[in-house]
Length: 468
Image (cartoon, rainbow, N blue to C red; front, top):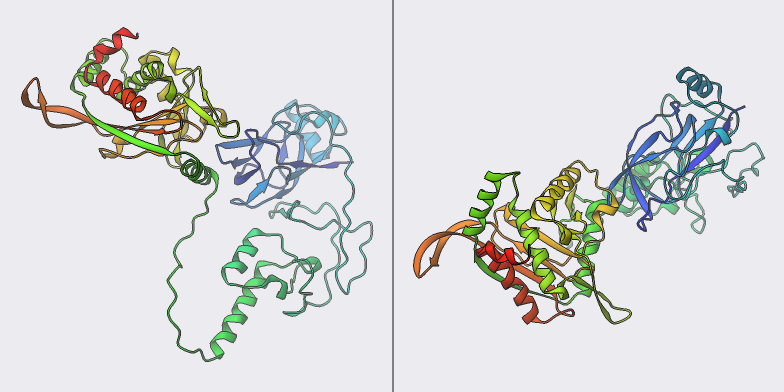
C-alpha cells in the first residue's frame, strides 16, 4: 500500500525565509526519483532548483507559479511505494523497496534529509455553522500554512471527497467576526484592489471556501449597486491605475539593501577626471601579447592596490559595538546588469590575484549572472564594490554604498576630450572616477588620497609596477 509523504519547502540557507514558485518541473501523476528537481523557485538572492527527497508518484502540488511560499510550507505530496512508482524504478534499474526508508534522500538542502518524516498530529478542523462535525474520514482543510493543492487534469483522487453542500450561502451570510475562509493570495489581492470586505462574502467552495468566482460576483454586484445610486460631484482623485510590480525576489532584495544603506550610512562622494590614454595603451599592448584583459579587470587590480594603501575603506561598521572592523582580505564586488535586475557578484580574495586572474573570474561570474545561475554565496560577502556605469554611456554618478561595505568606486565612460597634456592642448581619453564612502570610517583626506592614487594609476600605469 502506498504511503503519502509531504515534502515542504526546505531552508535554502543565507537566512532566507520565503521563495517564489517560478516554474513547476513535474505534474501531478508524474513519477519522480529521489533527489530529482521538482520545482524552480526564486529567492531574494538567486534561482534555485529544489530536489525532492522522496521517490514515488506526485499526488498534489501546492502553490501556483508566481506564489510566494514561506520556508516550511508544503510543496507537494508523493505516494511512496505505489505500484506505478515501483514499476518505473524497476524498469530503470533504480532503488526499490517498501516504506519511506528506501525512498528518502540524503541531506540535499538545509532542513531535510535521510529518513521518513515523523508522524504528524492530525489537524482538527473547526466545524462551519450549520454543518455536522467532521468524521475521522474527512480530509483536513487547507490553511495559510498548508495551501490548497494545485492539481491538473492528470491528477487522481487519493481519498473520497466530502459531500457537496446542499445549498449555496448568500452574500452577507458569513459571521463578520469569524475567520475568513480564503486560501488563495490572488483572491485576497483581488478583493483588496476593489475594497471588498471578504467577511461579507459567502464562499461556494467546500466548507464555505471563498473562490475567485465568489469575489468577482460580489464585485459585479457592488458595481451595479453603485451605478444605481446617483452620485454627487466630487473632486477627482489622482489616477493610480498604472501597472503594479511587486517588490520581491532580486528586485525586492536590492530595494531593501539600498534603502538600508541610505538609512544607516552617512555617505559622502568625491570625484576626479583622469586621463586614461596611457591605461588604454597599456591594455592594448597586454592584449597583443597574451589573453585579453578588460578595462574593468585593470581597474579592479588598481582598486586592490589602492585598498592596500588605504585599508580604512576595506572595512565595515559594527553599529551595536560602536566599532570599525578593518577586514584583512579584499572580496571585490562588481555591479552587473541582468534581465532579472542589478546583481553584485563577488570576486573572492581579489587582493591575491593579478589582472588576468581577476578578469577571468569577472567573465565567469558575469556569464553565470546573465544565466540566472549565481548562488547566494557568490552574491554575498563583498568588502568593496566597483561600479562601471560607463557601459551605459554616462560620465558620472553618486553610487549608493553596498551595505554593509564602507565604499564604492564608480567609473564613467572613457571618451575623447580636450585635455592639457604636457603644457599643450590635446585630445585625450578621459574618464570620470567617483568614490562614495562611509564618513564614519574615514575623513575626506583618506578618501581623497585613495581616489587620487587610483587616478594616478589610471594616468600612469607604471605606478602599479611598485606594487606588483
